[in-house]
Length: 368
Ligand SMILES: NC(=O)c1ccc[n+]([C@@H]2O[C@H](COP(=O)([O-])OP(=O)(O)OC[C@H]3O[C@@H](n4cnc5c(N)ncnc54)[C@H](O)[C@@H]3O)[C@@H](O)[C@H]2O)c1
Ligand SMILES: [Zn+2]
Image (cartoon, rainbow, N blue to C red):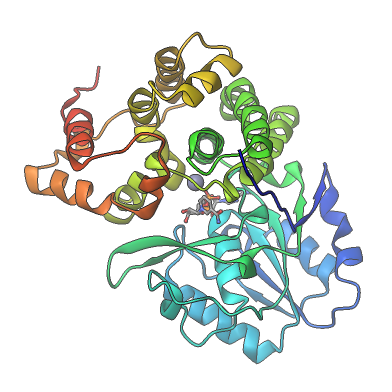
């Protein structure tokens, strides 16, 4: 088996590690903060301002950021003459910062068009506040174009941050529902990175480590938000899962999440997890998927799928689409819009018929 591995992002991890920002910003004169709006008016933003010496802050960022938000952020960066970006927030803020680092007039040029992203960009220092997307170490920026209803990732080496500073203390304020959704996203990254047709041994090992951490610590982080040990383990899982899926890329569950989020507003991680156990069953005959189940301590993939379904229930994530009362046309739209290229990374070929059956089953299940 031939394979390739590369990871260009410097990673700093630890409680209170945010204090390293001044050292990382040495040599830059015009830092700008791009941060989640949650931090406006909080002590965290004041602290980041003090640590970075940034004169300007861009924080008009919604979950699943829109291309228009990236364009406004780019404009601010140009006006401020920024020479580096401190990106502080969940995946939405970090992805906005990465895309805006190109300082392009209109990011839509590169969103879903296949046009090559320029190599020149501002360096980004990513400080994640959710655990999470792993965006701090990935070469992906996921954007939505609300004018067309399209949500899609842009992949480019230009989107690797210069450095990632992971401080688990920043995740202590994440509310339980967001902890559940972002935490299960980590599990999807690990599992999908593992079984992707682009998988390779380094990413496999990282994926198993990250998935085990989520299975062990996510319920506690949801039920006891102040438990810094659980938060730290999830932050570790998040960055390591980011490393595990960047090169192999995600597969079926992420492909299906894009329309579930863009059309139905289901949060990213929850949308990925909705179909994760279905994809484990779809991929059950793939020997590599079998090996993942065993490495995670389950006799076979069906038992892993059962466990994940149980975990979703326990942490309050949606189990089905019954409440949406989807009609035939809406189910067919989900099938059609789930045909994202990531689906081609799935180890088992996924037909429209399989997607239709899955969505139909998820739509019909009655809540108990
Ligand atoms: N770039 C990548 O590699 C990658 C990978 C997976 C997903 N994504 C994308 O990232 C986005 C999702 O990111 P996310 O799951 O981190 O959620 P998010 O960034 O959208 O944040 C979710 C919510 O949590 C709040 N929040 C963030 N940090 C907080 C904190 N410390 N305390 C309290 N509240 C806080 C935000 O205000 C928001 O309301 C989606 O667009 C998804 O598609 C990107
Ligand atoms: Zn994800």
